[in-house]
Image 1: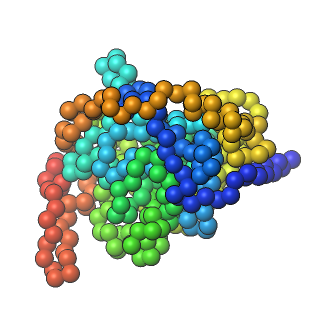
Image 2: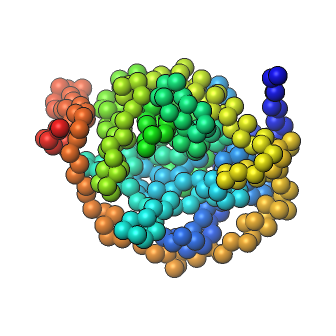
Length: 336
């Protein structure tokens, strides 16, 4: 028997500027959290309450890591209203705030990095394109426009393509997009346009995703489709599937590890009132930026990784008058 899951949103589709991040705790510590409020001042979940699609081809994006930053932030699935927090990992027996290394020749993240709300990569669903289950997170997205975002910003982005990263035996799709307000947005409509207008970016992005965990002792990542980027049409079908998986997630009546409380889905078992949402926000310690703890000095160090696969990210390209543009000598690094 087919079961159709229908959702009724209590709030209209909002514009990017209608969402406001609210900081709690002390930056640079485990207490720091970033919640989101809607235009009427109600705390919301960036995972569940922000519509995933604006119109065909245009989706909402929650910025977790602005371009050039190092702090590894993420939507916290295990806390009510899913605030954005800095991820942690145990290094040398100590639970530590996580930072991405400056993988030469990059500094931190080379794009604005975040997630598409109301999507979910189901770990129980074995994707036929990768042969493994999902990573249990919203779908990741990078935004390649000129403006540097901020944590908690909601961007409306045009979908361009996707690469099938397999990270630790889990499917971890990485979507490429551009802010619809960016001057380049009209020129970019599919993944091949990125290669034509921004030569080298696709290869550099793949190189980053393959190698970024290695400096901290992680393994090299691998890809489905032999590392080839897939286009917009494929990506939109993927988003439709992961949105359906999210609907199944928030309709479950049994409480799991993922917190699905929300303020906008009327017939969800985990819908909460505006008053309850405000009480959750109020229960957190006040924001204290004056007590900010700076990141360790090592965050600014550069990491060199022996490439196992050669990427054409260091090839000299020519400008309009035929002169070679300067590039960092990544190809001089030895490959296995």
